[in-house]
Amino acid sequence: MKNATSNHVYRAIADPTRRTILDLLADSERSVKELTASFPITQQAVSQHLSELHTAKLVTSRRVHRENRYRLNPTPLRAVANWVNGFHRFTDPAGHQWAIGPIPKKEE
Image (cartoon, rainbow, N blue to C red; front, side, top):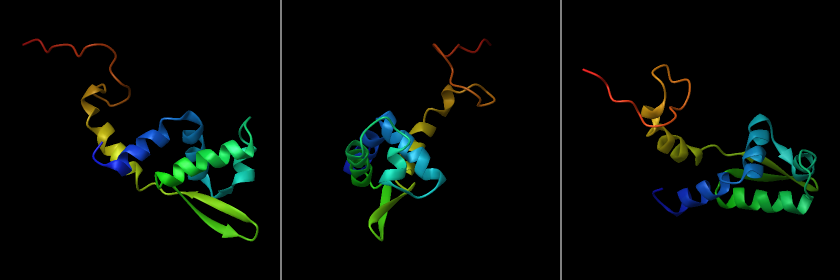
């Protein structure tokens, strides 16, 4: 984590509801009402999650008539992807899954 913006991004994606919102927005732009239909929580709660995502610059919005339409801004996720790539050595040789447990020592 290199700066305050990165800290906001990590904090935002730490919550499973916010990650699901990002997944939904990765498919298409949506209104708060459309997003709320995907969750067993209130529209106000979804709006609060969107506020966190907006603070982290992970979503942008635009006004269309009487509603805000939200869309994913994937740019801040680059820092997360770069950080995760630092752990690439923990995947199996084919890169399919994370290694579990200690990394075995190579026999010579």
